[in-house]
Every structure is written in structure tokens, then in C-alpha cells.
Image (tube, rainbow, N blue to C red; front, side, top):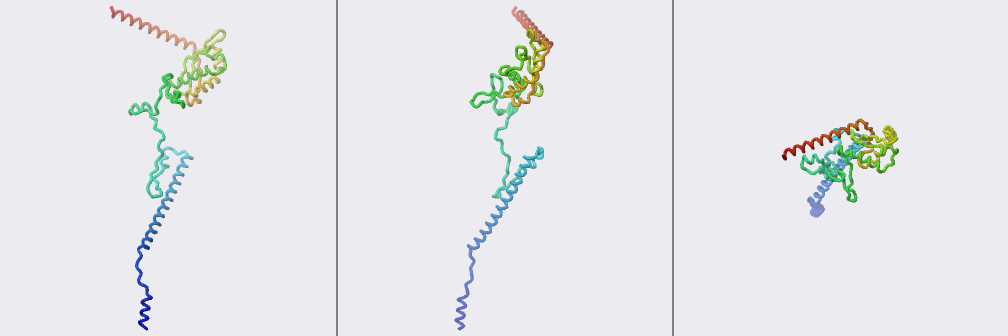
Length: 275
């Protein structure tokens, strides 16, 4: 009986268990997966936080006028993407090349940008239009170009507009010169009345003074295609006195006499050398 019990107990006792390597591997893999997932979640949260901060800084720049020296505090910092690699976000690059003036290009030996197209007929810079025809642009880069705008506006007023009074046309009005003041937006039209018959110089000057607002509006309207910002230009009419006109004629006469004397003296010297 005891032998039978010992055999039964020996049969009912399970053998000792051995470790399962596949189960251990599964446990380690799940732990590593959980760690990677947590890292990605933290990285994503950090990225969202940094993106929110960047949006907030940009909102401040859009809504508040920040002085230039304080804008450095609103620049984007190093940010980390979801994979955990550092990413440095820089400002957007220029979509077009930097403009280089002709003087700077001459000093550095490079080519000026944008390229300049010379209009030989008008002596102004131009650009190609849609139909590849040369379209004259505003000669506003130089003082002489700005001054030519005043003359062109006057010519177009005489050619296209209906003048407010007959005394302000070319028959009674001689525009001696167009002066551009130092502010580069004020044009002075120096004119000299041309009396004819019963029309005196004072009558012509009175007509110019009376209809000056209408003339200024016409000049501004025709100066706009040639000079950007011509709506801010101002035009003045200044009468040139007869004394100034006579002085100009006197100086011209003196220059002609001096030139003729120089030519005569040169001929005499040439004759002496031939003898």
C-alpha cells in the first residue's frame, strides 16, 4: 500500500518548469516599445509647445510694432522634430537676387542687377513690355531724369488738354526753363509773357495766376506715367522779369562776341605761322 502511494505521489508531482526564452523576449520587446512610444509622445508634445510659442511670437510681431533691436528676442530657436533629431529653422531665403547698384558693381567687379536697358532715343532706362517692346520707365534715379519729367508733362498738356484760357498757350507764354528744387518733388516753371497787340504782359500773368490750379492738375495727371509717386509732386509758375530776360540776352551776346574774337585771334596766329 505504501509503495502504491509513493508511486501515485511521484506521478502526480509535476516536473520542474524550465524558463521560456520566447516569453522573456516578448517582455523586453514590449518594454522597449512602451519606452519608444513615451519618447515620441514627449517629443510631439515638445514640438507642439514650441510651435505654439513660435506662433505666439509671430502674432506679437504682426500685431505690435517691435523696435529693431528687440526683434532678436522673437527669432525662432532650435526645435526638435518627432524623431528626436534637432532641427534648426532658418528664415526664408530671398526669392529674387539682391539688387546691386552700378557703382557697387564697378567697385567689386561684378555685374549690376537688375540689368539696365538703355533707350538711345530718349536717354532713359527702360524695360521690356509684354509684347517685347521697350517701355520707357521713370527716369527718377537722377536729377536730370526728374527734370525731364516736368518738360514731358508740359508737352503732353499742350498736345492733349483743352487749356482753361487762351493766354496760357504757347502763343502768349514762353516757358524759359523748368527748375527742380532740392526736395525733388517741386517743379518751377519759369515763364515769360509774350505781349501781342492789345494783350499785355500783365494780362498774361494774371491769366496764369488765375488758372494755375487747373494747370497744376493737368501737369500732375500727365507726369504720373513718367514718375512713380507723381501724385505728391507740386508745380509752381514763376514769372521771369524782363530784366532777367535782358540779362540773359546780354550774357549770350557777350559770349558770342568773345567766341568771335577768339576765332579771329586764332586765324591771325595761323596766318603768322604760315608766313
